[in-house]
Image (cartoon, rainbow, N blue to C red):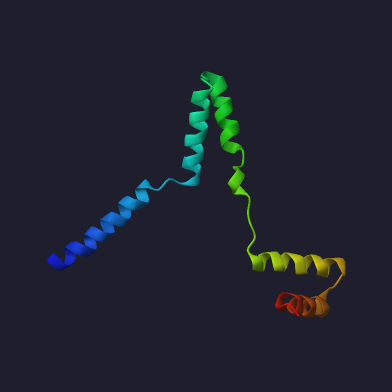
Length: 100
């Protein structure tokens, strides 16, 4: 019985920790709500503000590319400007991505 207590306790702690972590949408909702309260908006005016605030992309929502993704994007653009197709494109992309 004592052997089951520790794993059950650990699982309980993990489930509790996940319940407290705020998602990006929840954080955005909290921020928009606080801003609406600061502006003392009420009724339809508040509803409209919340709708635009929640649908607007956050500043940190912009996707950043990993170095490999950036390299792929650059090689792809180069292959496109050179109008490469088929095996020639495949060979070019392979050498470009390897850095040769």
